[in-house]
Image 1 (cartoon, one colour):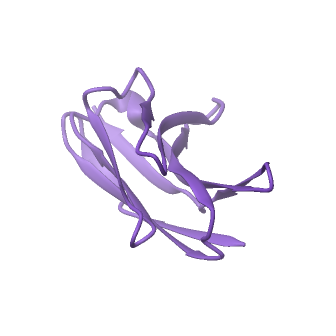
Image 2 (cartoon, rainbow, N blue to C red; image 1 turned 90 degrees about the horizontal axis):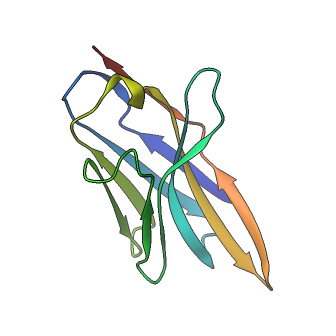
Length: 119
């Protein structure tokens, strides 16, 4: 099992910044992907950004140029720096980790942290 603990959510005004942090613990071997998803009220959970062990990073089009994902493999952490925040960024943000063992992918999720952007 992998445990993911998130921190850093909160309330911010439009144009402000927040930094989310996620730390992985437990059986952390073979974690291939780490990243963040978000879910707004009444909407499906969507990818924000994710990165692989090889350093390949994907961002949702809606956050490109505003959000930056950084991963520290030695510390098993992944941070999301969010700048120029908009009201539509309001959501619960979830840290995720994916392990690949014998060709099977196992996904793990944090408990979520609320981000609210006021207009």
